[in-house]
Image (tube, rainbow, N blue to C red; front, side):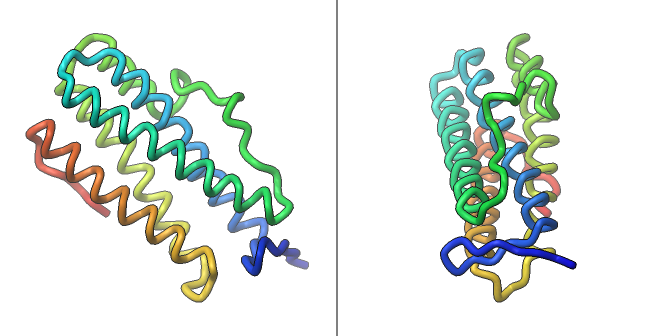
Length: 161
């Protein structure tokens, strides 16, 4: 028997919540990794871009976390996460070494995982779901940000999907 919780008209089932929790963790890890990477780079424009992406990753995680919390499910504890032990650890290492070429490679790898997680979440949630517009909006802005970051780092935006 599948159970669900209602959050302001948004019905969530455990399988959907697990998918959202994965996205939340990736966003929180990305937030921390981009924030720390921004501290390591010297280029003010790149620092500003990384800080902006970091802030948006945190905002997205908090928004999704609030939705699952309102539906009665356990929220992700951001304080218990460690970006140095996450999928983003190589991004941090590249930033610490000042290796901007490696930084973009690792950012691309991390962003690819995040895009795949969003694409999966969009597929597993019904198009009629109230959650669908939220996921589609976050996914669309994620793609736009990746194009901006790729352009800033003078790299082609690879593998959008």
